[in-house]
Amino acid sequence: MKGIIKKVAILGIILLLIFTGACSRKDIKAYESSEVEENIEIAIRGLREEDEVISLEKLKGMEIVTKEMQSITSSGEVKTKKVKGVPLEGLLRSYETSQKNYGGIRFIAGDSYSIVVPKEIIEKREIILAYEVDDKPLAQKSQPLMVAVPDERSMYWVKNLIEIELLEEQQSVSKKVVFLETIVSSLDTEDYTYYEDLDKVVKVTDLLKGDHVESHKEGVYIKAADGLDKEEDIEVFKTGYIKITGKDVPLFLSPDLPKGMHVKDILFFTYGDNVFFSLDKGLETLEEKKIGDKEGISLKDLLKEVDLVNGKRYICTAEDGYKLEVSDDDLDKGLIYGGNGEGFILIFEGMSKEKKVKGIHSIEAVK
Image (cartoon, rainbow, N blue to C red):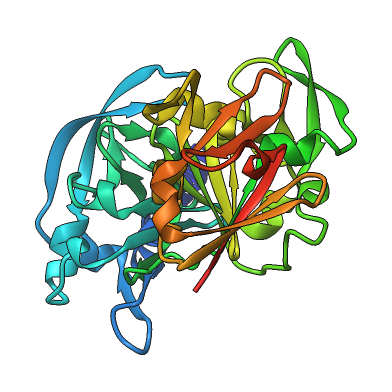
């Protein structure tokens, strides 16, 4: 009888230890989860001279909203998501400012991915810093917070947000526009399989060589024909290619980037003081102009598009080195036409035929 009692007592102790251990593990897990959330911090740059830091715990104590929002994938597919979080405007209001006061806002993820949301989006969209999507909390260790920008490309929906950088309004520093089609005609091309198609590409590093480009260490601004704006890290950009044949060209791609972050139908991109402009896309995007029997792009409209109408004189350079200098009063008379593999020509209404620039390579503004 004593032996049975002893065995029951030992069994009871074992069960008690198991139960206590399970509770302890549960308590530890809950404690660790709580600690993780308390320790998550988001840096905010550009508010003051020193960076501000806000914890996720404090963020959740602000006004919370729940909304259905749509994002647009790179292929044009529209996806609807229910997001819960804090409006960026509400966060900035606590610092006595507004998102509309800035020329752009850069969101930076824990894996170093970053993108600038341009002013035109900032002014019309309610940006949410979401911590729940479709009624499920984001994984606290890997994705504690996500940027949700309604009715915009999914590239702006930055996951694993760790930093917000507020950018002041900046004036364009562009001094020269260089034409992509003219440059790539003289560069070596490579075969590149994009989805199931074999296309031709040129290396970005080859594109940025030569007398027409000076070195540059900051970001690259890209604008697509459909109005998409993107800022790309310069080092990431230099690892990539510009696809020049097939669909959606010119198209920036990199083997180091997911396809959703490639930029198709590039109208232009800026690199330092240079703008690389696609005349093929310009013909599709800008309003047509006629001079005699020639149809093409208004030179003034093109220069307005890249914010390069602040010069007094303009030096127009051909692929073979020929140069023509015109005044700012002549911009209205200029027309660029051609394409389809035959090269582009710049002419001016009222000027002699000898003044036309065949194989237009670049236009530089001189103050």
